Image (cartoon, rainbow, N blue to C red; front, side, top):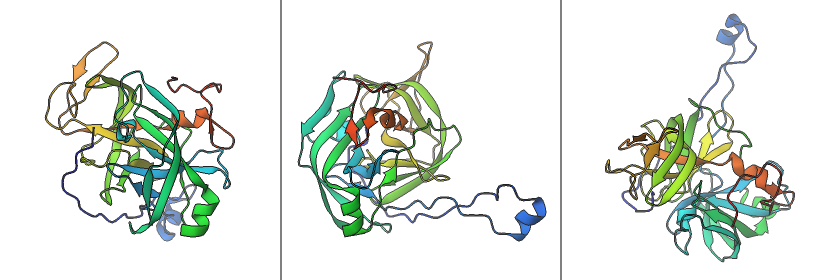
Length: 280
């Protein structure tokens, strides 16, 4: 788990380009291709020990209390034990909100941990004492939108760390049936290609699809030393129980599952049809 803090550097986020859909070859040559989604630090946050982001669900409205996404292992109360699920726990945690150039804009404050676990996934969601509209009015920042869809292998992504003010660019290499680290097991984890060599402090960073600008996963761990299934050295376990260790490779947990568990008003409801997050 990416909690230790070693070395920091800044990175500049660039805008990519995609082919012009529906154009003939001649038209494509004569007209510039439209830009892909611009990925920046806007809406990312720095925690005391991790990274995170200001997020909305697809059905969130401007007047809803805003949410902050990070990892379960970044909780100030300690890492939840296997099988532990935290719901609606009071919190006054603060977050430093960043603008598109990674400048500090101000401090956001939570009222509670709406949801957190390290079982099947590694996620924490904080509810703030303010709305998206108020944040937009005061800071000019909009939240990232959590994609409701399972990501696709080969997708170009950026991992944007508010803690280090550093960005990593790579692709989704594939998906892991089970990722084992210490006593924890995570399911259907995202494996990065090697270019996303994330470090301690990047835990909780949003993983953004560069084509759509949607948030598709939350960064959480990597195998540092080549050890097998130990803390900071997760291993992959396939459907047949075969174990694979990939030293230097890093991982994230998918976030589309979150979107099925929030009712209108940004209200967590683990009983909703289609909600598959672990329950207390």
